[in-house]
Figure 1 (cartoon, rainbow, N blue to C red):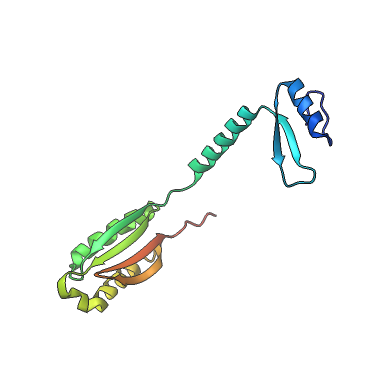
Figure 2: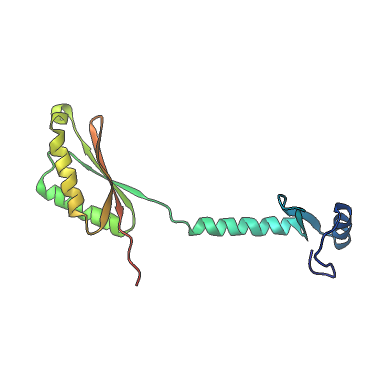
Length: 155
């Protein structure tokens, strides 16, 4: 309780409450687990406002993860594959994670090795821009690959 003529020190609860009433402020418990508990005489509504403001600022500074999805089939042509690689490069440069999804239809699921080769080829084409976070994984009739952007080295 420093400021406005009040010195920091150990006070009884009654004394601390009297001081807070004299100053027209609130007695707020800052650290309840300390021995003795630490309290402060402050304007509680102003204190809450400042806390919310700090939380909002911290929240606005956090980076939101965006996941972009690119879909293939095991029979995707070379030109279409290159087109999708160019889009993937753009997404990774923008800082988004990339989910490559290979859909098998009908009996194509018998050739899952062909799909895995295609996804690995896709990952190899993007190795300069991102790193594989999750290797190709078959889930039902879908095979997925997750790629995250490489972080830029600051020098």
